[in-house]
Length: 87
Image (cartoon, rainbow, N blue to C red; front, side):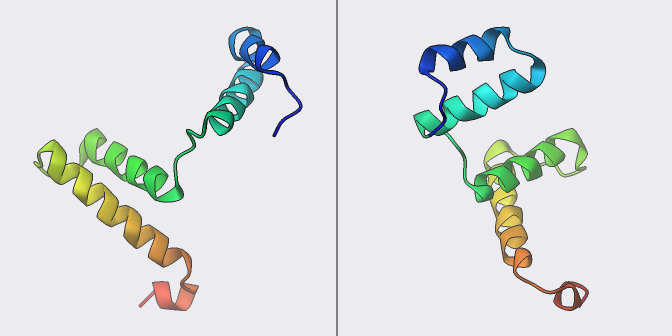
């Protein structure tokens, strides 16, 4: 838990510098339990890349399923050695 009060965090989130606003946002999310899992983060990145320009024509449900399959593969690859990854 941070040493910032709720009021101080709210003030930083609105009036702080860019870095202070980002820090305040993260601390507020932690307090509210809104942090996403690494799997959700990876899936979001995969979906973002797909939406930007994938050349694939998938509906949104297919795109979301693909994003989580990519995220699962990324999580599995995290534990592999560089030799295993090159195979």
